[in-house]
Every structure is written in structure tokens, then in C-alpha cells.
Length: 297
Image (cartoon, rainbow, N blue to C red; front, side, top):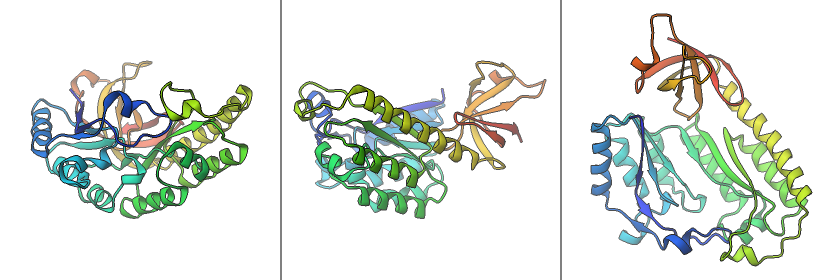
């Protein structure tokens, strides 16, 4: 057992115009901190080393219990719990508070990796999406995160072709992607969800234009991921061993603190099965878009 997910809350209050979640899962309901901590400690005792705190918007955790978000307190509890690695998803930019960023920097167990969905680099489209932040606010958060955690790796979600998106709107997305430099990007061409406000919006962009935009963003995403991975060359990283490489049983595969896949050649007298679940040091010798290649230290 290596990784586990702990739901700290259920439902969502945000009503992004393209999302069906609030309608099918209801309003936000936060679990009590002591209940969350008990589950985390049980997972640690069971051998889990990488725990992700889970919610549709973890940053608003506790608003229903206390009248204000208290996610930073839960994050600190997890950071002090004794688990090797703590992560959290999903983090809505509108509710990412300074105290949460401070908690990320304060505990070594909280990994230097954050999924921060952008969705669009156009303020006009963000308003139509009902995202409750603008590009300036988003980029300010990125600056704050990197000031507190200089080595942090960011990932994101981007929707291409939201109803009414123009080439100018899309160019705004490309500019933000260039400026932030994401380690990983999840890219989607917009598709209607019946029952959501966006499903009734005029949506007449030709499919071939959406595909062409997707391809342009894909190229930029590959370039960004490669640049992020190449920054690791020469570093020694702690790698959580998960399996042997699918192509070669003599090569271990694991995850870095930033969730990068790492491969390393084993010595002839070593066996991946004996190392599963352990954290080993790997010096990174090379990097591709999809993984790091290194040597066991």
C-alpha cells in the first residue's frame, strides 16, 4: 500500500456554469477535523506513505461548520501526522488563502506540487464560467506560491472552446500558460453537460477550429512539461518506489515529490519487489516530457 485518498468534504457550492457536480452531489459538507485525522493515522498505520486530502474545493473546507474556511488547519494536522507525503485536490483559486500557502511552506511532509485549475486565460470567459476570479488574481496566487515554495510545481485544467471563446480569448490562455510554466496540464475541448447554464449558451465555433486550438495548446503543454522536468537534472530526489518499469523489470518506477514519474536502473542483485513502498534517492541524469531517468544513490 502506497497511496490513499481521504475525503475531507463532499459536494460543492461554486456552480461553475459548465459543471454538473453541485446539482448531483449537493452543497458542501465538511467532515470534522478529528475524524479526518483519525482516518489519516489509520492509513499511516496500514503502511500508506502518500495521502491526498480530497474535495471538490478543499480550500472552502469548514465554511459550513465554522462560517469561514479552515482548510489550513486540516492541512497542518496532516503535515504533523507522521505520514511521509501529503497532497490535496482540488484547489479552487478563488478560495486559496495566505494561511494555506503558509502551511504548505511550513511542513516538509506537504509536497511541493499543487493542482490549481485555470480553465481559461480570458477574464471574459472566466466570468461566463462563473469562476469568481480573474487572470490577475490567478497570477498573483502563482507569485505568492512561488515566493513561499520556490521549487513548487503547478498543474492545471484548461477548457478549450467554452461557448463564445474567440481567438483573442484563446490567446489569453496561451499567454498565461507561457507565464506560469506548468509541470502538467489537463486539456479538454468543451462538451455540454445537460442541466448546466453553459449548455444553453450559443456554441457555434467550428469543430476544426477547436481541434486546431487544442493542437496549439498541446505543443505548448509538451514544451512546458519538458522544461519543468529538465530543471530536475543533476538533483537527487526522494522517489517513492511503486513498481518495475512496464518495459524492463530491472528498472524501478516511482514518483518524485512533484508527482513526476522517475525511472532508475537496478543493480543486478536488486529486485523491485523488495523495494516497493520504500523511498529511495535517485540522481536525475536525463529528462523527457513524460518521465525522469536517473541513477540510484
